View: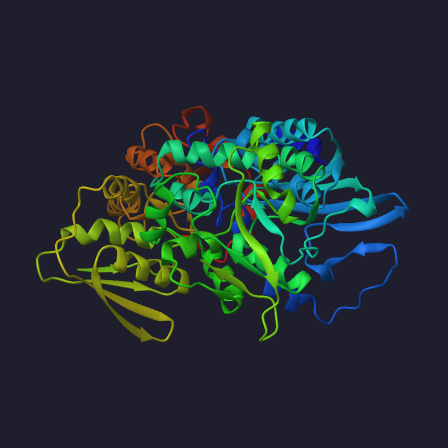
Amino acid sequence: MADDAKARQGEKGAAPAPAGEDVKLTKLAECAGCGAKVGAGELARLLSDIRVRRDPNLLVGFDKSDDAAVYRVTDDIALVQTVDFFPPIADDPYTYGAIAAANALSDVYAMGGEPKVALNVMAVPEDMPADVVHQILRGGYEKVYEAGASIVGGHSIYDREPKYGLAVTGFVNPARMLTNSGARPGDALVLTKALGVGVITTAAKAGLAAPADVAAAEAQMMRLNRYARDVMVAHDVHAATDVTGFGLLGHALEMAQGANVSLELDAAAPALLSPRVRELARLGILPAGMYRNRHFAESSVDVGDVPRDVQDLLFCPETSGGLLISVAAADADALLADLLADGRVPDARVVGCVGEAGAAGGARIALR
Amino acid sequence: MKIDARNLTCPKPVVLTLEALPKLAPGESLQVLVNDSVAEGNLTRLADEKDCELGVERSGKDVTLTFSPRGEVAASEAAATEAAAFCNVPDRTSAVVAVDTDSMGRGSEELGHILMKGLIYALAHQDQVPDTMLFYNGGARLTCEGSESLEDIRELESRGTKVLTCGTCLDFYGIRDKLAVGGVTNLYAIAQIVAARPGVTVL
């Protein structure tokens, strides 16, 4: 339990003086946010020979590479289950906690569901000041409160590298659940947040990011996908996923493969957090996750004559990124208008469309 | 000019290279030694952006990237200025250094004090400072008032080194109230630190 860690923190009277206020939280992290994710290919390989029970009520399991598992309880209620945590992605502990929570909650929204209860997942260094731990938790609790859900417990351990996140349980009507494999040829693709978190957080580790860009990235990461989800479920949406560690192209590829369709993405269409993110990408300020994502997805992506820095941004890991929504073309304009009218989804854009699987067979993505 | 950027995590190799490029004399090239594919990919992009010809030479895991600028690389960019500032922020190694005496080596105790002072001064001025320094038995005197190394140990602490002195030792010598830098620790905490690291260097 998280409260445990706090209590024991207080007991350590003879403990060394904590490293101090001036220590940047992100300096304690090897990788930033969802950049810390194990590659998709690696994960599939690790699990390939392990026996899994088949259950007719398990509507979405790991084999679907979806955002969350969905388990049918009754004909109109299904459980949505997910967990997500990562090392500090922001220096301010409250901001870090809120981002980790928004990111974990997002997987439920990506299934079209509503989160109800959550458990803290936490690792903290023994000498982390109790107030810092408290602020991380406060960020998490307030985000979960904003989501209309409750934190009902959790587990925390000591670790040199801090980690925080949530295991989230939500509900969805199975008939209205949105997987990442329902895209249909003719659909339009809508992305609800801007890109650039991966390069800005990498640059921030080196003090190379403009403070305004860091603030924009943090504000976006803290923003719940709840608002986009609430608008989305009122439209003729066929599939959805959230864009996180595998980058826009990685998650888009999962969507294409899940439905055996091809996608065409307009590389210039997604909003960028700042015009400077392209400059950072050109300088090679790119996280390791970009290369993992490229390695995994590259052979299925026709990059056309899109400049390399833009490609890199599309492959770059995002943390607490937007929803990628496959919506009936006839309803795309209305969905976009409603998202923008909400005021809390200002960076929503139509970023591409869905086509038939290529003649050569297989799901591919073409950039234009 | 040469930079050894092996084992540095992204984006540090880029930052070091970004800082070094404007300092090259006309016609001079910059060699950057790296040993992971992320640094190599990032530096390849940097070479394009800064209009440098890039030579790549592999030797086992090590890759030497040779940057030959086609023109002058401007240093005026805000990024480069900030990069310089970043590079002054020292990194820590994962090393744990244990100090069990205030006199280094055997022989003259006077010489031993001089050596210890010199060694701690040198440690404080390395590019990378230790993660943790443990002071016990005679070493406990070094973190207390009257120690000639106080300034250097404070410098180490300000650069991120955790400075810990054994409480039992402070009590034994009756100098607990003289502790002037770092925190107090106990054998249990020392055992944890020692058990968690691959090697502890005893001065």
